[in-house]
Length: 356
Image (cartoon, rainbow, N blue to C red; front, side, top):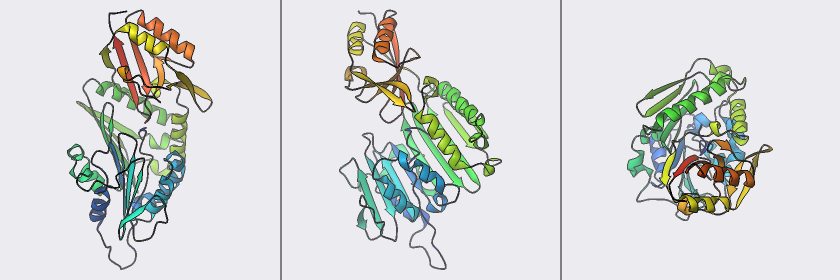
């Protein structure tokens, strides 16, 4: 489950037609309608089948992730549970577009009816839909599109180090995740994923879902949840446990992997910018996990809201500690910052130079 965490936490669905009455749309038709309303510029897309998400194994998970959703998506979630199809897109600016194909009035203030049985919500954005350029026409989603159309639960996103596709179905419980990355980042990502699998195996709540095979071929990693064993586990408890780990995440090694991005800079200017930066401690579960930048440092690819997790691998817990660590590191004419971005992705920036 990814952080962009995102981002797999937005879970909505499509319900099956009942009795002898024929469906107005096939699943593919319904998916086409909702996906057509998601802008092609979306960096994360979720599509689902309510028959899966209303399954007793997955429905409790929705209640657990509800507090993690942006304000306004709760009632969209409710609408999705009784719909034919749902799709959600997230833009690079954090804006969200959701489309729901449903026969009933969802009674959700953020949803607007644009066709008799099609409703759209936009949060943090102006355009209600991208009719001329949707995810259906996005070249970047060519590989993911079949899964968005047909899988009971499907998710794709662009990460700092590559792109990810994941699918799942509840009965029998099956899931797989494919991560396409760079040659430099592939071994880093593989180590991180194996560490996460080991962590799942080491906790009683998540152990039933740690029966995962991981295979790396060149720059692609594929993790598959095997269909033997997990049926006896409580998926909602496992998800609650994993979310608890994320909220309390103090360790740099527990952050999503990316290979360091290296830049040459004037070290004197960098030192002055970082030592005088306006930062504040960030606490999760009672622990300081890093220092948030109140103002952006665009010359160094640092945005307002980014959190400095570590300097040269050492976790930061106070402004004086951060200032001292930066000054010490730059004496060797290089420094590596580990940042948690606003979207909960992780960036590792390495700065080198010769000027003081």
